[in-house]
Length: 307
Image 1 (cartoon, rainbow, N blue to C red):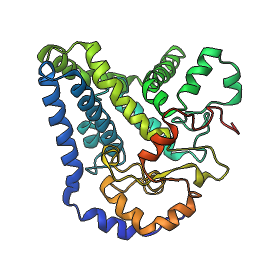
Image 2: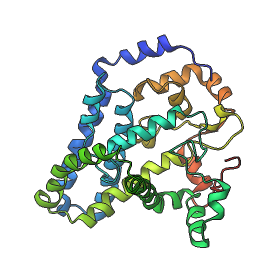
Image 3: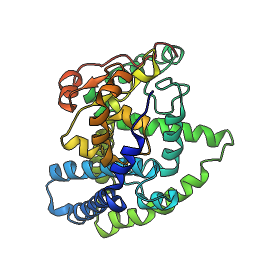
Image 4: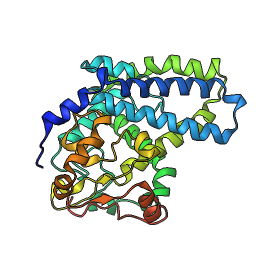
């Protein structure tokens, strides 16, 4: 992939002193989360579902921003800014390890090489039973990915982590320990101070928040012969672009993971022609188009064509 205009992009990013948009998003997330949880019993359940899902998803996108070196130059400080994980099930350190390997791989979407791939090899597919295949096919539609995908995401992480522990691999033990320490005060706030039943938090915050995050990843990558053509551009400027911190401009993010989220739109406008040439025109006009095309229809099959 050709990458240009890095000096211009750096100047553009520095036009926002101290990366204040990221600090503002962090403040809005934690303030909003505090207000919604504290007033949980006074709010209608449907409003909690919308606000809780948005805030948990937004926090996960801020974790993504922090692991790429924002808003400070200290990875440790950035990590503490997004602890604890509001969606509870994924330790930040494990997410960092997985996502950086996703960026390092030259084999995007390949299930044996890309830890964030939603595809299976033909051999793994052949070993599945009819029910498992049906569930995976349902998740190739956007509605299925949003509703069933959170359970699949949690299952994949815990199955992998349990397998590592049972085989004597304790490399992630520190991540789990820090995760447990970090979520302890969060659980005290939720269960004791706010008196929110754990099942209600899982149903109204964690599940919709994870489902919203999967809207972003649903179309991000596809199998393609040319590696550069495997990553999408979604030209969305609405609420979902803000929720996803402009990571809908995904091929640009892969080319320039150092750029902060608020600098991506200007960089994309400057280099749109070059970027779309790089990714073979893998383009959607916005998330509205994706919902219209794939809400109830599978975008492809979960079997990787070459793995």
